[in-house]
Length: 174
Image (tube, rainbow, N blue to C red; front, side, top):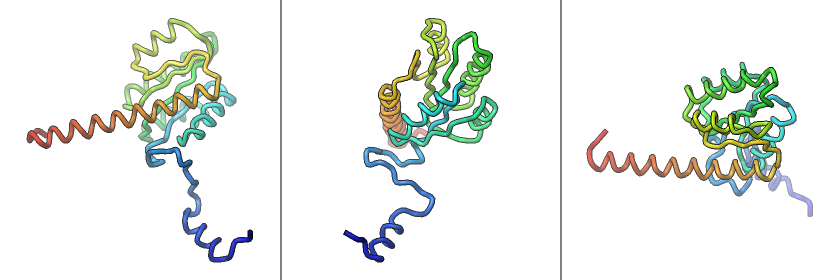
């Protein structure tokens, strides 16, 4: 069936130029579903991007730690992902410091992914206040689950914030 010119025009008007359609399963406005990602590997960064996009998140993937740190200050995102290499890699310490810096500057949920499983990394991530620690994460379905759960956690935070704000207004507190 061929589309008429009026159908083509109306479909173009429905989605403004330069904007992407958000999958139907997204339950929050796209602006709330942005995440910041830094990884030691382009391949792993792409894995996180693909998992994020499949769950209606806009992934802002940083090329290096410097760009990541600048974006922590510049952007307000609800989710931050730091992907650590093996502990003997040259970028390991720099990425750990970037994760710690993100906790100092941002209130976003922090996910620390590690190339190798290790109790020391998990303990460090938990002490840092990471929302999730993902040792040896490489399964796309598992990463998609993390993005779904992050959306739920953010929704719960928003509800708690709204309820506490409503209680303060009802009692006259500011």
